[in-house]
Image 1 (tube, rainbow, N blue to C red):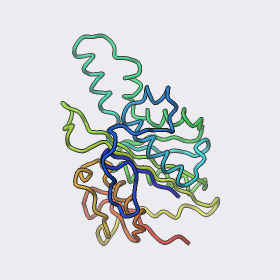
Image 2: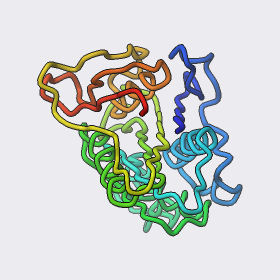
Image 3: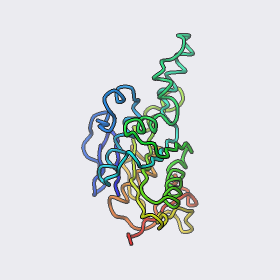
Length: 246
């Protein structure tokens, strides 16, 4: 029903798949009220921006729509800040830093902002996070019908845990809908004939943990049909089948 995407290189998805001109380093995140926006870390803000775009495009009622949130590594900048406070003997870190360091912080911010009491699972599965989040959403749709939002996001892992310059922050969200009683039409599985058509990504996004989700988002925007790989290049990785609507 709707797709949202944010990276510093391009805040919105275009049908041609080409990212717009560079934008601000932090998104507007209008879905979050000002008080929450000030407390939220970068990862929560970019995820909120992508969800806001997808929900606006698809007309999702976020007060009642489950959100499946996935992040390969979570808000690692908050974790590094906390460890720095402990290591330097400055006492306990701030409560806000601790709150942002837990893996489901973006999902919590979204639930508070929208007043939603629906399911809000948070998934961390490394390079398989995109596939696992989509499978979770497909299960919800199969058993409940209706709507679900899948939101995926990661920020660069700061030193000393990772390479801050490896990839930019980025998030993508999908608004999925299925009629009650019909079951999910999304087919996710292991392909037998390779990854099929793969939309090209900007080089800076290729190593991003959400690269499979970016690839899928561009495929949807370009109305690509066929099997889209959700893995990191292995022939036996997870994939999603994009088919014409019936």
